[in-house]
Length: 147
Image 1 (cartoon, rainbow, N blue to C red):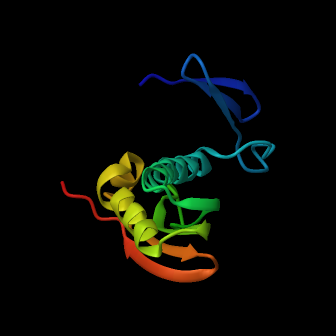
Image 2: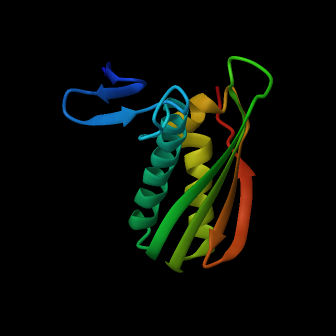
Image 3: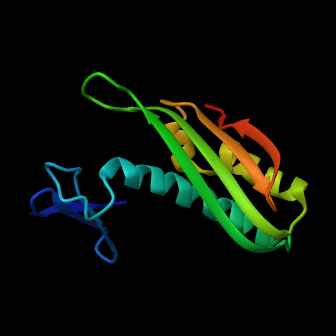
């Protein structure tokens, strides 16, 4: 993997892998807050990584879902630099004709075996998750990867 990050203006940055790009911006008063911040992109990467695992598993098991989203709430340290994540809470929300046990297995496998972003982050910060199916809480757990 290779990423090049270039300054555009103010605190606006562009990161590219040569084919695709993503913009980042800082918080006011230093940045204009026109894009996600670098830390927000880390969280977005976590959500994207685990979402792809879950979607793939659900499709493999022929589950008919109509909607899927992940809400991430992140607590950060207070008091001084560097401000780091101290806790990540993920809420997986799915609706449709889905077997709850298959959805729970998909999330568990993502958070214990497959999601590389979660595996890296969980070495530094606890990642908790809950699973909501058709508006009902069907399970919860914590990211735990074997070293």
